[in-house]
Image 1 (cartoon, one colour):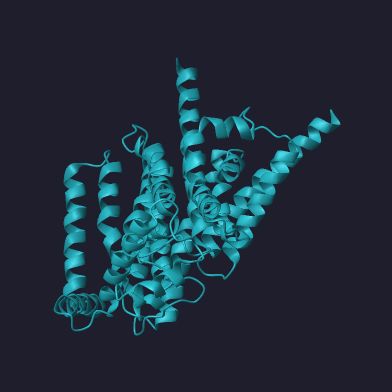
Image 2 (cartoon, helix red, strand yellow):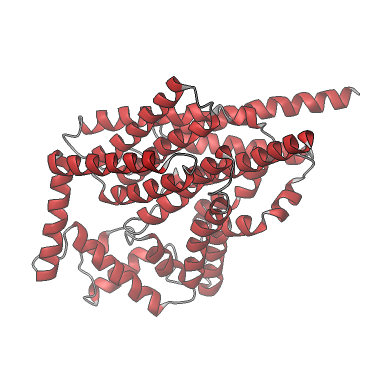
Length: 427
């Protein structure tokens, strides 16, 4: 009896701890250096502790839950498998290259840990989204002097930071479905958090982040099927007018668009191919050449800089372009470094979790539907930004992606379970 009581106390404290770690992550990960890594490590330790104690969540062990969602667990292991395949194929083994993909590979453990958290605890995380979006807006305002300058990076590159902050704003707005429809103050606060995320995107001057905004709007239109079409059209018109006004009157947008047009004109004329866009086009071409020459295993994670230097010597890219650390395209970067294994790995990262969320995008329950929308926004947001930059190169991205997918999917599972139990009681 005493052992049972201790076990119950251990689980209760563990649920509170895990909830607190998730809340702290969304509040601190973008504004405090190393917070993401530390909090992710603590979640990993919590998972090991639960494994050692042979705990069961909803009558499921770690292995039972992983077996049920094995396609997703396998997809998250894809980059690790790709690295291993490359090193076996090349015969060159480097231990440090396993660290980043390992953070994705432990998704199954984090997913299982979250399954212990009751849905009533999970709902508290909505306030972490809101606070995180506000703090991100304050951070970028301070670092850019209110938009006067464009900083490159503090501990997160500005384009990566802006996308994650924008998504926090989107998560805040979509979590309105977790509240009662008459909570006007809460709804207003979350809309303001969305505006904070958009403000971060604007001040970031990151054209790649701006490209994801129409995708996020499209997702919002799909999940808001409970809202009248006339209201949705009004919101769409409002955003179109807002974006048009910002583009016309906002100096930041005008300058960035002007620079893009100038870069393309110079590149086409062969006058300056080392501009921002010109360099991207060179790196895309160079990465494709590397993939064609090393289609199965790629050139290797550690050999990419050297491979660019060789392309420069062959006059495929310029010496300036050869100094860049990545391809400015996630798919091409994975293909050039890890070949077909890398291609399948990155596509799996995008589309495997997206599948689980897309199937609930039209669910009759608003809580399920909007949470699925958060998951799709995460996957497609990363996919679109990945067309012009490399996301999975930065440490903070791995825990952000793993924790978010695990959290949203767990919430959907628990919400569906509650709905089914309520139906059983009524029948």
